[in-house]
Amino acid sequence: GAGVSQSPSNKVTEKGKDVELRCDPISGHTALYWYRQSLGQGLEFLIYFQGNSAPDKSGLPSDRFSAERTGGSVSTLTIQRTQQEDSAVYLCASARDRAFLDTQYFGPGTRLTVL
Amino acid sequence: AQTVTQSQPEMSVQEAETVTLSCTYDTSENNYYLFWYKQPPSRQMILVIRQEAYKQQNATENRFSVNFQKAAKSFSLKISDSQLGDTAMYFCAFMNVSGNTGKLIFGQGTTLQVKP
Image (cartoon, rainbow over all chains, first blue to last red):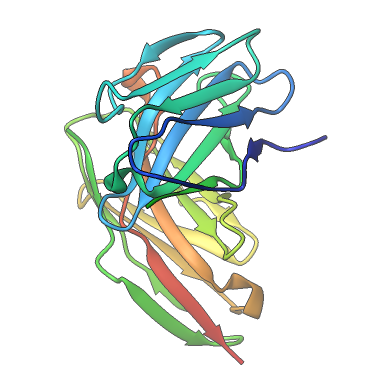
């Protein structure tokens, strides 16, 4: 079946603008994760969804970052008032259940560049 | 808090030879999983191998095997008969099962180049 997809593949924005990044998980996967990959910080966890709820938001770096998931499927990560330090690759992953029960499958990521 | 350390930023190996990538981690937990992920230039993270901490036997997947030393908190990846397609960035990752979320904590990564 289809894998995890993310859109857009690349996004260039100006400092101060809001951006939305989208993740389409594998059909039937209830767990969804967002990670950020940046030169300075490496690969870091942002948020975990189980269904439509987010029991772990501990990785969101500031209140400018928010995420939602609707219908237990698509998730959107929103960054408000973007800053240059937000430039990174944002990766989404999904699993049939919490990922200690099943493998996390990653999408190709969205490369965000903030000018 | 758990941490994962990969001390080799870059490595290279000749095609058909064997290479070992190092990973150490720090945790006070007893129930956890460890992973190696591969990230080729396409950016798509691919699971290479997974090890449950309660298993003493080292995991093996075809040409990939691990040396899991729980007491030393070490988890190295051995790639045998290296192929050009193995060229990628490799990440070691830790998952605390007790945390009940399944989030991964990654090392800084090792860039592996396989030379023809």
